[in-house]
Each structure stands twice: as C-alpha cells, then as structure tokens.
Amino acid sequence: MRTARLDVLVSSHASADEALATLRLPKATAGLRATNVAARNPAHVVLVDHLSEHATRMLLYHGVRGILLRGNSVRHLSWAVRATAAGTVALGPVAAQFLVDQYVRPGRTADAVAAARGMLEKLTFREREIVQLLADGVSNPAMAKTLGISTHTVKDHIRGVYTKLGVDNRVQASRIVWQAQVHTQPRHTAPSMGRRRGAEHCAGGQSP
Image 1 (cartoon, rainbow, N blue to C red):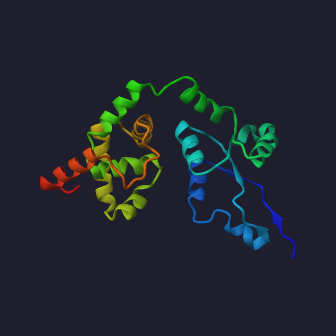
Image 2 (cartoon, one colour):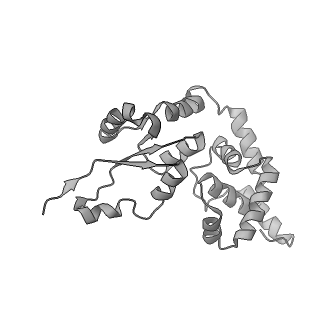
Image 3 (cartoon, rainbow, N blue to C red):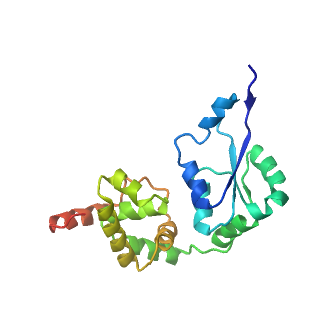
C-alpha cells in the first residue's frame, strides 16, 4: 500500500466564515486518511471570494498559511503553494494590505492601546469573557455552551458589551480587543480589576 505525504492543502470557500467553520472542525484533514494520505498537518492555503481585516486575522489565528482571493487565485496560487511548502506565509495583495495598514503604518499607538484597555476595564468579568469569545469569532450557541449559560443570556451580555464599548457589531468590539493587545491572553486569566468588578457585580445581586 503506497502513501503520499501532503505538504500543502488548498481549499476553496464561498466565504471566510465557511473557511473558518471548516478550520474549527476537530480534524479538518480527517477525510484524507481514507485516501491513504499520511496525516501531517499540511500547510493550508485558503481561497475565498471576499476578505475583511477581521477575516484575515481569524484565518491566520487558526493556522492558515496562505490566503488568496478566488478571483485572482490563478495568478497567485503557484507561488503561494511553493512559499507555504517552504514554511513561510503567503498572502495575496488584499490580505497583505490589511497587515501593512495595521503594522507598517502604525495604527496601534500607545494612546490607542491605553484607550482600548480603558474601555475593556468598564466590562464585568463575564462581559470580558464574552468580548474575548467575540474576538475569537465564536458563535452565540458556542459561547452559551462554553460558559454554561443560555443563548438569551449571551445576547444580553453582548448587548451590554456593545453599550459599554460604544459599538454596534462584533467587528467593532473585536477591534477594541485587538487594539488592547489582549487577544492572545488565555480566556481563564483575567486582570484582577475584572475579577474584582465581577465580584462586585455579583455582590450587587445581579447575574454576571
């Protein structure tokens, strides 16, 4: 029985959300075993129809090594596959521009970081858990299961987060988390201020 070692996996998706849903599966490459391909965590190149800064960040966060738009993938796919097989990251022009805008043209000034962290300090401990999950792209039902609460309670907390942060949607709330540079912190470790406020919140007779 002959087997082949997969170096690069290319997948095509109608949207970034669809790609992310696939990446969150327990074993995205489980089906490969049935075709006698040795599993070895190949470099993953994703093709999508549209991209946003948020989608680019989340795809990279979940381990994608290459991101291209399907519309111009024919032009870029060959070098992207070679680059990811060699161990580097391959980003198409749109995805690369998002990173340029964020890092080469400094968007995270010390003042911006301090302001974002100040906004997060307004949140209770539970609300911080919620906004972190929002930034991770977790759905409402998944949040409810993770936190052991109902989806209605999740929605109530999300509304509270939006009100305190002065935002209208998930992307805006996630941007504040990224600006605060706390998106890589473990969810179970929260600043002591958050724990104190969470305790005060509970002590006041309100459900966190």
